[in-house]
Amino acid sequence: MKIAPRNRTIQLPRDEQSAYKKKLLTLTNHCTRKQILDRTILQDVHAAVPFLPSQFVDLLFLDPPYNLTKQFRSTTFAAKSNSEYAQWMDSWLAPMIRLLKPTASVYICGDWRSSSAIQSVAEKYFIVRNRITWEREKGRGAKANWKNASEDIWFCTMSEKFTFNLDAVKLKRKVIAPYKINGKPKDWDASAGGNFRSTHPSNLWTDLTVPFWSMPENTEHPTQKPEKLLAKIILASSNKGDVVFDPFLGSGTTSVVAKKLQRKYVGIEFDETFASLAEKRIALAEKEKTIQGFRDGVFWERNSL
Ligand SMILES: C[S@@+](CC[C@H](N)C(=O)[O-])C[C@H]1O[C@@H](n2cnc3c(N)ncnc32)[C@H](O)[C@@H]1O
Image (tube, rainbow, N blue to C red; front, side, top):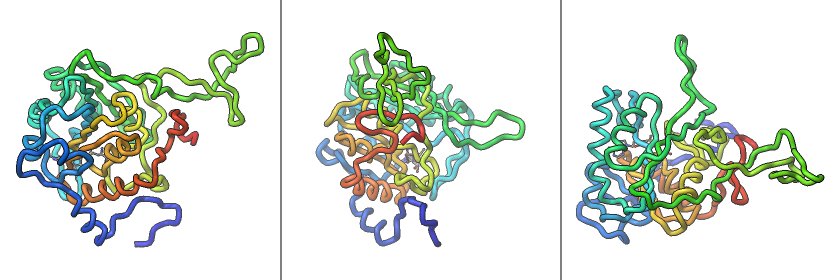
């Protein structure tokens, strides 16, 4: 298939897939922390979790299939009733609690349909601290409904003791009315590119672009998260050297961003092509450390970089 010149989607030719596949782990015995750090596990989450060590996770990022019928290459996730979705979630979350440090933070992604089930299950195990809503630019129009253009990310912690690096996740916004006192900017900076202010990050995220074909991070994965989204979460809720765990790794975004931000990572994904793609992205992150939309320690407004 001919690819358009500006299409930067990461490809995984067959020979590369078999090379990256060799890097994947499949667990059959209990493992130590050392054996799994900075690795991708090719396995069903239910099968892998019992072999993982206790209390190795500082930050858990959960991006399971949402409660929609959706094809993920080799498997199809079938939409369920709300209570069945909650039961399914509980089936993999309950055994995962053992893996978390008492200071761990947890983020759980969903859409409006799965959010109530997520909240009810999360409240069983965690202190639920917030629900972030991110406005997607893309969304499918509906004839007799509001277009769904948002997703939720539930922010939880294991206890009252947790990391939150506020200064690392401030947002850079253009100043519309540059107010001055005695001729000096009030809470904003003038630069050649315009006037900007660093603001406290809210639970409404409007600065994220869903990866698309001309972005260098884009892959063929149907529900890939933007690297910038993971960067916010990882910077806010972990420190350098901490362990970030993603048991629904997909195309590898969490591990890639963890690596770029000098965290350790562990990922689980049961589709061999996606898991190999994740390994390819992790290898690319050896050289390419930039995160689109995040520069000089600052998160910029959508499409401003
Ligand atoms: C919503 S996607 C995650 C996308 C990911 N955050 C990214 O940026 O690419 C969910 C992923 O979980 C995988 N998955 C679904 N059920 C699984 C299971 N039981 N065990 C392991 N992986 C699973 C799917 O193959 C899919 O790639």
